[in-house]
Image (cartoon, rainbow over all chains, first blue to last red; front, side, top):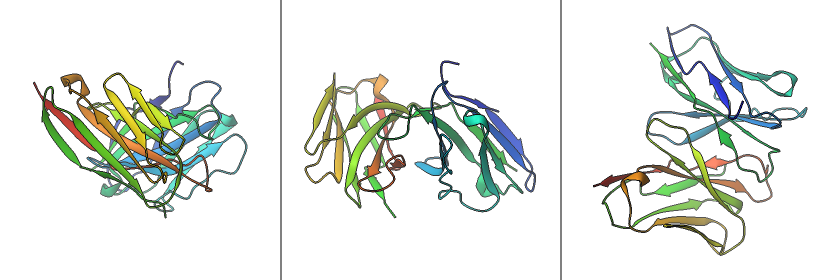
Length: 114
Length: 113
């Protein structure tokens, strides 16, 4: 597609349930990022993938969060046993390489945990 | 860890007035980027600054990177209602992982027509 595609755009889930958020980066982009944005806050780095290298998971807030990137393209962010504080917009972004390049954001997945 | 701070958090102006947001890093940056996020939208890249003391202009927007590469500013001349949104700076730490962008909390600009 022309841009970074994320799904679902909105998700309401009950506390304790698992959720999966999907990101389809721009074709040809080798770098993929996940950020989290809570209401009125900045963007919190979660995880970074670059090609076949080991991902940088240093931003994941707890072991309930995990992410995969299959075939160097689509990525899935999984949150297990969701908590109310997980409610936020989860933004995926991609860039051509990763070093010094502009990153292009998707529209985000708005997660609400009730 | 690296911190990027932005001030002010909010700014309300009358249309036609100028606006400035400031960004300060706790560490020296290799480069800094600026993004704009419209209400309900996602961040969109505006510009990247790399050189010490660099100044770049985009129409009514002027971006500066400090001599020490630890601070930056965005100035909008004669604001318009289309300028409404949150402006984020994002820095890459010098000598560190050159892919990780650390974002400031942003400055929300509202413009009264």
